[in-house]
Amino acid sequence: MTRLQDDFYDYVNGKWAETAEIPADKPRVGGFNDLSDEIEELMLKTTGEWLEGKNLPEDPILQNFVKYHQMTTDFEGREAAGVTPAMPLVEEINALSSFEDFTSKLAAYELAGKPNLMPFGIAPDFMNAQLNVLWAEEPSIILPDTSYYEEGNEEAGPLLAAWRASQEKILPQFGYSQEEVADILDKVLAVDAALARYVLSNEEQSDYKSLYHPYAFSDFAKLAPELPLEDFFTQVVGEVPEKLIVGSERFWTDYAATLYSADNWENLHAYLKLGAANSWTSYLTEELRVQSGEYGRILSGIPEARPKEKSAFALAEGPYNQALGLWYAGQKFSPEAKADVEQKVATMIEVYKSRLESADWLDRETREKAVIKLNVITPHIGYPEKLPDTYAKKIIDDKLSLVENAQRLAEISIAHTWSKWNQPVDQEEWGMPAHMVNAYYNPQQNQIVFPAAILQAPFYSIEQSASANYGGIGAVIAHEISHAFDSNGAAFDEHGNLKNWWKPEDYEAFTARTQRVVDQFEGQDSYGAKVSGKLTVSENIADLGGIAAALEAAKKEADFSAEEFFTNFARIWRMKARPEYMQMLAKVDVHAPAKLRTNIQLPNFADFHETFGIQEGDGMWRAEADRVIIW
Image (cartoon, rainbow, N blue to C red; front, top):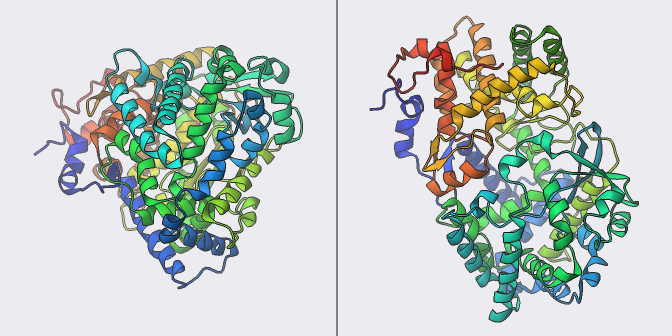
């Protein structure tokens, strides 16, 4: 039997892992995932009744969801239609005659969600977080990260071959001959290999402050001189913007002019053909749906495709997820629970304030500014107060096909996104629905969001001890607060603007401590892959701060139990996963593997050593000089 002194994570979760079974259509099972699976079962059961005409919702938005869900579950109709609903798009893209022909249609393609290779979006300005501005990003690559393309990487060849094999099954169903398929895929893979030299790695993308490069529009337009960007943006947002922010500067300065050019038209056309053929595969026949997910399943080691009923629900849920989240919260999240969690957040903020005020490694001026930022963090608990106005526009037309309705829903969402340009940021709009088991901190809005779905056992329950709840939801709440002061959040002020509010010597001390966190995780093993301390540093800082603040809060309770606190912290991270999935996450995920979030973090705390009698020589031992506490 595993000794807790040697491997605390396995001691707490080992017996569970022995019997836990990963669903055939999933990459993992565990704390977060178990709750997600339970919610999925509830939603399938409930919406299944709605499809049968039972207990139908009165909300007109949900009534339109039901109509749409009926279309996604009309499997016989989808089989009978075959690829016919997608062929107009395929034929339209095939008919493009030149680069000029394509660029003349760019805005129309963008507003319709058709393939166009324009990586632009709307998000707050880092220097004025109350205003939405235009951002220029970069196209995606086929493999999960640029590191796969490095010389000597043994995974790239088999994965690219698997991707190609999946496309060789899909493209012929849209009328392409074997010769045309080979030509399309040869061209796409050649461009993909070139792109991989210029797009950012996941590690680079994880450093927010390095992604801000403002350009005057006239200067940016010179980076891709053959793109008619003035016409494009005039049609999309109504005028030529004065400026835009480039997040992925290397791509635009070094490769965009080559990619977006008449000389490169044949390669671009291949990309567009591939995009058109893959646009609606999930909405068509069962064979195509399964084939379209083949590459993703290989990446994650998943043996079976998601059952068609689950897939049909997911398709229908997408455009209506916030509305379904409100329904879920109304059923499962009581006003009493909301009030209780709001109080826990307020308590945790007060604890955090005391910790900031006593951080003697910082100058008083820096501490005061940190407290100012803490005091104006806005918590959102359970569910949003309102849905975005666009939801009322999502009306299903029974006379149109599934794909035609999906197209209209996409156009509504795209128009909503572009309408935000040059407008104030909506501080009330949530980034995830209430039935998602997750939480987040938004550094540009300085707000923390806790959907109803995460506010249940093992994270939180009135039936658990206070110490267990602090080790669960308390640590999660404090984790999100800590993001305001992690390696990314620390670069933004209380208004969400990119601003250095630190005294230089304090930021130097902060950087030295964050480097120690990087060092603790760098090179740790995860299913044979090596964890990147730099990629995961912001989340690891948040975990570290979350545990510290939650532990201090738990100690204020009369019935405090360090054993229950640390045990529940380890329990919420329990996970059993497929090796392929974990190896991929090591390259792309800003979160450390679940086991390391327990076993690397907890030895930083003296209470952990004292509570469990951990001695030098034990696997969980860490010398006092090597322990790190930031917040």
